[in-house]
Image (cartoon, rainbow, N blue to C red; front, side, top):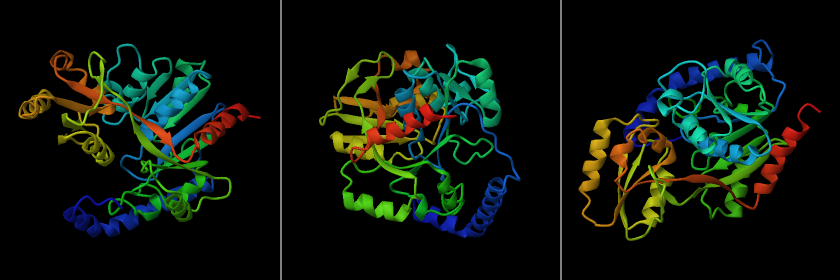
Length: 356
């Protein structure tokens, strides 16, 4: 369970009875779906679900981004996300004038990076899928973002993610822990990926986690780490390296900034950080505070660094950011133990053999 400090831990433990009740409700719900009392719909095209059993960041967006990059040259591709913290409701398909305020930061990130694919949002995936197919009838494959626990749809292929530092096997139900689904639901996964691993993860450490997760026969277990790319300017895209003699002001509103801060600390002389809530909508006041904090840094060679997810919510201040050394740090998924080929083969075979 992820407890940030003593006071939060104490408070969450006091909520243990509510967590038990929540767990019972989940068990009943899943039982009804398993017995087909509650109906789940299947669609006549390959649908890949990416999700987790817990709240918080397990790396769903980088995985969806990875799949999009892998598949978009071969198939007409669509993604459907909830669009968390957007200021619209219902189904919406991204277009040329779409903003992060309308569809949410992560879908906007997909839309900007992969403009050739259909990016849609909708709270009810069961409604969004047919609407996307109506709008883009040429669509051949759909990726459902953060949909593992949404059982109104039965995807053809389930990818379950779990954070290396907070495996679902060690967790408990909300609000005492972070679980939003039963641990037993992991049996529905075709692939389980342990994310955010140390790139130097040893075979012994891997084997211990395999033993703990205990995948079912036929389930495939992978391990991945975060790979950080080259910085690029938030407005004019010019690249630059992150150097040891640079001081960084880190600005981010993501669920789990620990891996990012560890990377910044390791690759710079010193850094300061401004943390915002996950999916935070940046205001002019926030921008002024960022500028004030940046100006207070005495070192001559200094940068502001943010994530791609935050950048799509900051880029609306185009004029204000143009002349600031405000850079974006991209991330990608890196499979450990030379397992990337096996992963890609499993995805390709699912799509090629769908319906046969």
